[in-house]
Amino acid sequence: MLKPILRSINRFLPPKGREFSRFAYAGVKSLVDIPLKNRLFGDKADLVPPLYLMRDGNPDYREFKQNGSVWFDRFLSFGLKPADRVLDIGCGIGRKTIPLLDFLARGSYEGIDPVQGQVQWCSERITRRYPNFRFHRADLWSKYYNPTGKIEPSEYVFPFSDGEFDFVILSSVFTHMFSADMLHYISEVSRLLKPGGGGMVTFFLLNRESEALIEGRKSTVNLVFETEDGSRADNSDRLETAVGHQEAFVMEAFQRRGITMEVEYGSWCGRAIESGRANGYSYQDFARLTRT
Picture (cartoon, one colour):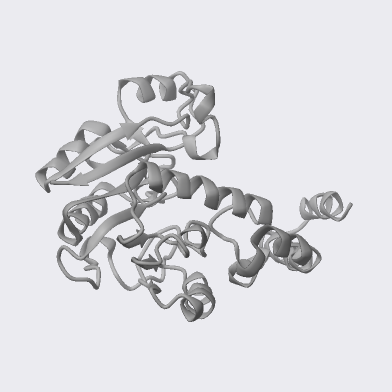
């Protein structure tokens, strides 16, 4: 009953009032749903953040659990191994991390994120119990997501050695990044990956099919504003709310850095996909990376 009441009240609140209302509701629901969280996560329940801290996805314990399971299956299908050293760029607040805790018992994990609260939670909760899992904050500038950030993404050097990682994860990173920043990240990924290493990246890839669907107003992401290198954004103010990149441009950029890319297309643009992949993680385009 509480949620419909708050929804009706929210219509009359200013933006800050709506944000406070959502935060308050999530705080109350976090307490009410503690028994559910304990049932879902068992001895790892204390590593799962309260709902009001879940800014990297829907604040719901069941969905948090389901998301983690689907991500874990993806990582395995893309070649992740128990002894791998993993770099997760845009790690969030543990949604993708918790399923890896026992799997990477012989490996290690480094997560990077610009949101201080997410990094702090993961460091205090996860690293304390699993010291081979570490988290780092990068104060990266974004006109939309972090306008006070002090570091330009195109100049950020990841604080790790060359060839240090077996597997790299970039989920919903390049979908919020313009091409100059993306090209720099691709260069860094190439530097950090061992020969034979791999990883997983998600995109909104632009090609004949996706562009035709956007033009036909079938896409759920309105990528119609041209930016540099043929990329497109969903607004005219250079906000990074959603950015798509030309598939050929991306593949060539990886190839120049010694990385091959195999694509599994998603449904974001209105593309029909087989029913077996019809879930939240068939939405974006997925690319499997292999460092030669």
